[in-house]
Length: 117
Image (cartoon, helix red, strand yellow):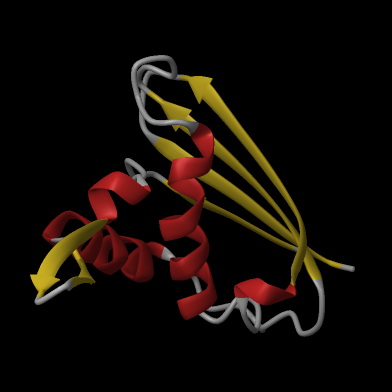
């Protein structure tokens, strides 16, 4: 089991990507806000041995206002991508159960627990 805490404001999917028109289609690129969140998170995340195989992930988002900010699932994408990039588990396709919670708090914080199945 891996348990980590990030004292950061999470980034929602709506904030994380920007659509760039390319003819008839659009390409999504990471926003400056996402790139900063990724940089800050990767700096704060301690080195851990990778959990291989299937995992269960629980993420608790502590928000300064839980009702006026994004839906809880909007925060999951960027957070999962970054902890996968940090090497805590193989790939987010190995997640068999995902539990998301959001709470009103005085300070921004993200608590993550990854359990091998």
